[in-house]
Amino acid sequence: MPLLRLTVDGSPREVDVDTRTSLLDALRERLEVTAPKKGCDHGQCGSCTVLLDGRRSLACLALAVAHDGAEVVTAAGLGTADEPHPVQQAFLDHDGYQCGYCTPGQVCSVVGMLEEAALGHPSHVTADLDPDAGVDLDDAEVRERMSGNLCRCGAYAGILDAVRQSVGAR
Amino acid sequence: MRELTYVRATSAAEAVAAVTADPHARYLGGGTNLVDHLKLGIASPEVLVDVSRLPLDAVEETERGLRIGAAVRNSDLAAHPLVRTDFPALSRALLSGASGQIRNQATTAGNLLQRTRCVYFQDASTPCNKREPGSGCSALEGYGRYNAVLGASESCVTTHPSDMAVAMSALDADVVVLGPDGERRVALDDLHRLPGAHPERDTTLAHGELITAVELTRSPATRTSTYEKARDRASYAFALVSVAVALDVVDGEVADVRIAWGGVAHKPWRARTAESLLRGGGLDEQRVRDAVAEELRASETGLDTAFKVPMLTGITARAVLRLAGATR
Image 1 (cartoon, chains in turn blue, red):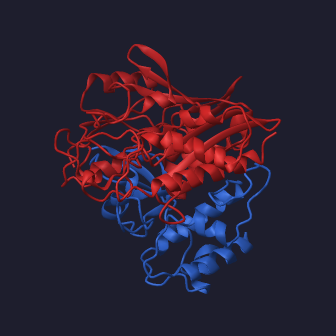
Image 2 (image 1 turned 90 degrees about the vertical axis):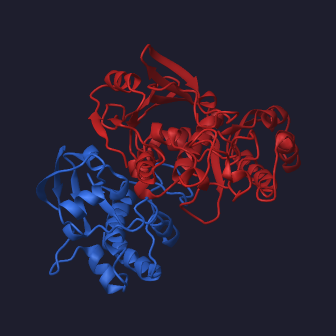
Image 3 (image 1 turned 60 degrees about the vertical axis):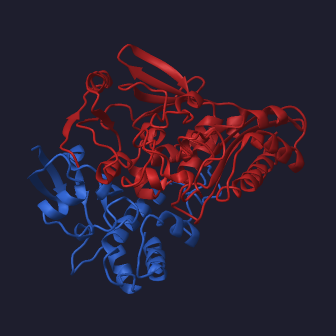
């Protein structure tokens, strides 16, 4: 079985994995890193979102062996109970957590999405593709950019408020 | 899931040799489609040759346009400044597909080679000629909202799912392919095939051939290009129908027009009949509708797909006329 080396939430980790193991299963079942959640397991819900080498990615569609040497940051690695990440604090402030199941993926997705916007990446609803136009993260932009994360509680209103606060804090 | 041997290729030539030598080997790129197929039991390779770390991840400006490496991520390609200015249809198409996370993982070559999302293809418990040749087509009598209306066969009525490929068709892209005997170029329109009696074959590539790049040639039309997509919800859904248009109008007359459709066929559908009817002469809505009607004379629809004809006509007219307002 291949030896997988990862940096997970800042700590070096090693584990032997079967080649069929998804990154999500390697994290949750082998390394006991349970912040990323298994929702649909087919790339449709976003609850397994982590920051993989700095970009928001779906751990369920990533084959673990293909990511040997990667840096993985989960929602648990973004902040602590005493010092939450500003995005986590914003979710708290605006009641964006609800049942909490999709939350770690939502939080990672917001952090990744804010970085993409800061780099000037356009979205489907961006009117002007001019590379110098910049990104104005209005509600339509946020909704589109967060559309890969489903919340079955329907906490979208709170999440949108939390993102507004996070945008303002950047 | 069957046991797998994982191999990380260190060069494109090594990857080609490995897959060519083994009929049960497959390339692994970003994995967003293939890993799902492994889980669903609709792909069962014995060997995965990982090509995602090969040095094929650059977008390079060429004399004529752009050379896009096979491993360039969809998100990076959509955001690339030269794609945004010289080939906006490509940015628009990429941004209309999947989610932010998936676009960060999916690659250019993988996007071209993704397989249909037909619900029967995706459900290993149902007959499907594309998944298991000779087993039958469940979509003929089943859920048909996403079925083809052009170029389908008795064997298969599914559609190609890629938005990006539709834009690349209208942009006259060339695909660079490496095989055991060296490199060859394939026009994007010749990469995917209509189902005929062999819907299990999505493309004209031989086993082992590896897409290494896609090349685009810039022109006034590619600079004035766009992609529009109609779907059942605002985001994160495959196209019911989609259209990519590249247009150049000079002194009120159509100097160059290219139209490709998604959601209607087993491959991106280049509407060449409509294009030839529109070339030369001015543009108005009726002229576009008439040209589309001529292209769609060959269409075959059922109860579930009849809506695609007026939807395609409307979305094409809208895209062409919007661009017409923006050209010279």
